[in-house]
Image 1 (cartoon, rainbow, N blue to C red):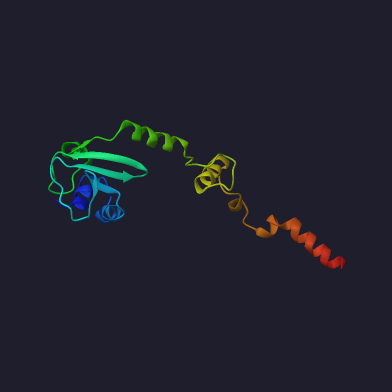
Image 2: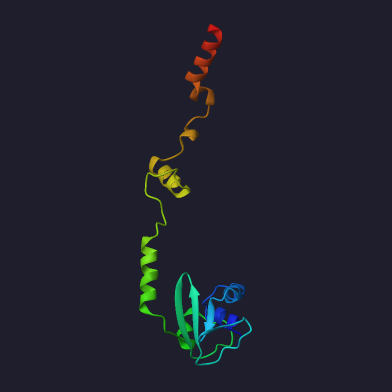
Length: 148
């Protein structure tokens, strides 16, 4: 089986084209040599993959016939990645701020919905006559025009 198809079938990459692009960028190697997408994978090969600034290392146990379910991946490959690499990944995820702190910047759509749920219904729906709503400001404007 071709290496791009293999990496896609064991769910290492979401699509086969992404796997092919990563191979072209020399982020995948078998043994110590970089490979092309057409390289055939055999049982017992050790594949090194650079993904998300982490160096993964997997050993091919068995070659699947087609794309397999996530639960069956462990039957086809053995993860030989250093534990240090997983620690780096874990630390990187912990340091990233996925969400902004409360009170900083404009409210998100989710924040807006939460505020509307807390307050109740929209203020705009309580007023049917906009002239009454803006009554004071429109009277002030007309008074200013009359004074001039």
